[in-house]
Image (cartoon, rainbow, N blue to C red):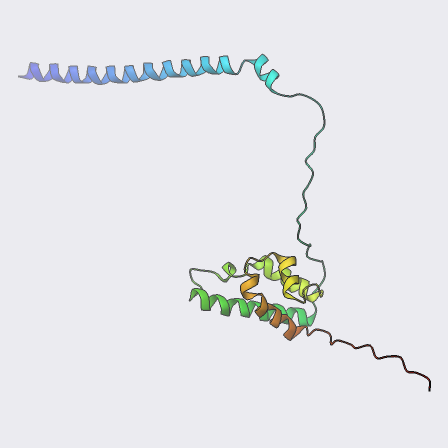
Length: 172
């Protein structure tokens, strides 16, 4: 019985070794085939023929955004008050939409960069109407919440009253 068990163990271990050897041979054969394939495909002359080596000094042209850039200036006192009110509006509106802002941040409603753009553009008198808001920010929710923001703008930056030109006085 002991002879039979030792024979079984040696056969099993030999079988395992032969499986490993066959796997190693397959791996080596696959690596060689891959190297031969690369040698045939990536022949140096063929690679040079495929690559255009003209010296045309091509440089990518930097593309500018179609949105107006945020002007560099410090905010006025009314501008900073408007910013605070706009942040409060965003928090209240997002809380009404999403509930607690633990999972859904208020940035989903009005992103920080868009909010800052609105503040700076309003402070520099570039946003006074709904169309100005759409054109200068490209905010996707301008049609749903834009009139609320414009009413907030008009609360801090009231529009100038219309002046009717009176006819010049006549000498009578």
